[in-house]
Length: 371
Ligand SMILES: *Cc1c(COP(=O)(O)O)cnc(C)c1O
Image (cartoon, rainbow, N blue to C red; front, side):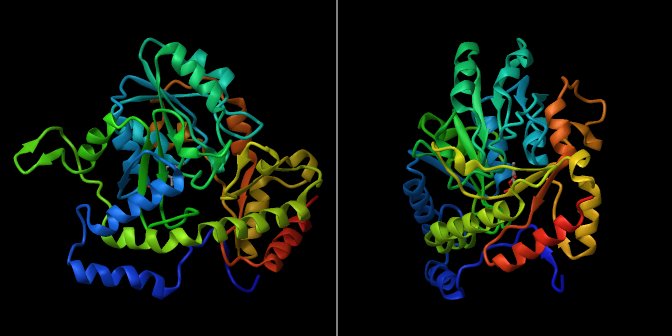
């Protein structure tokens, strides 16, 4: 390839669309601390998600940490190791032991059939991930949570814009978090949100994001700082109107990859749009490579494409439980599916502005590597 192709590229609105909101920052002189753009953005998001309660944060990771503190999680929390570092770190940073549960072959989210064996008297919650925007078995998870009195916090960082039975992905469990990082489908440069139904959590989440300050003279809890500023909110407001166009362009790219790669021996593609209950966001294009049938390994393909200026990514390899920083820390149950998938997975480039001709070219070059 002449030009470098990365796995993702941030979406930018027209400059005027952003400037329109930035001009208002100069009018109000307010840069942060629940400014008018922050409030307007929170309202717009609540409307878009049909969410009763929403707390904006400076990034998705701090949304996780605040939700963990606000929901009062402690002891052990059941989660999956097939995720971005943030999910596992958010628990460890709060003195909680992550207990790793395996994932399904089907859509690479937590395997509900393996959750109960992870429960001990110290378990306080389940932290599942809607990996690649694939929705977890929310019904199965609620049943277990109810039976054992556990909280459920979803890492929905990949699932913005996804709906199940017409309900937005953030409406499941006790709370869900989104990431609005520049590389995510919808972004505020850096940013995040906690979405929830129970308004009693509002005081806690808002407190943990702003030093626990209740009013000028009352600091009611020990909180840090995770406030979203006005420039971030401006970017969010400028990007919201583009959401349907962002998702439909990604859908077209996803279908193109499927058209080109479906049925090739040794390649597995995921087709979430075949589930009638799900409105997908097409945030990632993960494929699995089975060396035995494809004739080349995942790593061989990764390096060969890289040499060709196509920067695919091994999301998620290694598993978080195998990170250097966790060596010997936590006892892992057997994780055969997560291990296998983590060794076979590659995420292909997808972003707005990636032309179908380039997608075709990427596929041609990938297929040339077939042994
Ligand atoms: C991106 C991401 C996060 C963290 O979000 P940031 O906004 O980058 O802090 C958490 N979990 C998952 C699964 C992510 O992909």
